[in-house]
Image 1 (cartoon, rainbow, N blue to C red):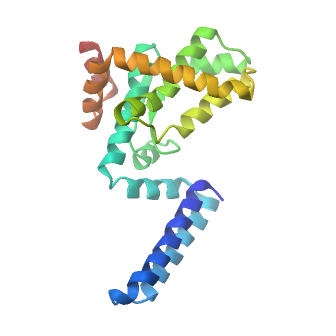
Image 2 (cartoon, helix red, strand yellow; image 1 turned 180 degrees about the vertical axis):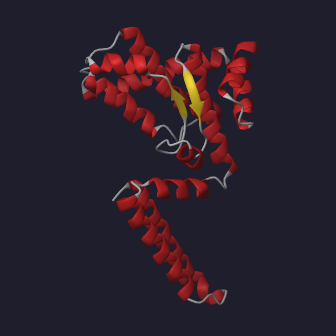
Length: 224
């Protein structure tokens, strides 16, 4: 079972436990939480087998979206990716800030910044990659974590970014013991870039909050 489905199961267990404890106090019929729990479990099962976890991801993302801090974290995280990519010459092609937006655009996961990475893919197909390109992409992948750390002192997101970095390092022959070292190094590199261009970063965050286009976001960066 996927992690998303497991999260839905955890929610259903919490709801059932909560209703057992407080139901008698608010005269809540036990039928109501039972039906809700079975519905969530049904959604988790159907989603795992029919939608590869996308439905559950959207559902959980919608719940998390009620938190202003969660929404702000996503924007600051993705703005980190966007700015560092732009500074390092990695073409940004779009961005989404929720799983629902990503699904509407045919993307997997919870959304994020998308890039034209044809050059990277071409090199990886050959099983090799230039040191300069590796550094650029590794720094860009770690930039979301770096941005969260700078704004909130710690990062909550970035699991997919770490996985992507690890997959590329594995393809080109790095040992697993080198992954953590590379992560720390490129997080530091991304932090330095963000701090050196902090006004551009803050302006980009505001632009992305307003769902500005990629071209408008790039214009905001260049004006700072």
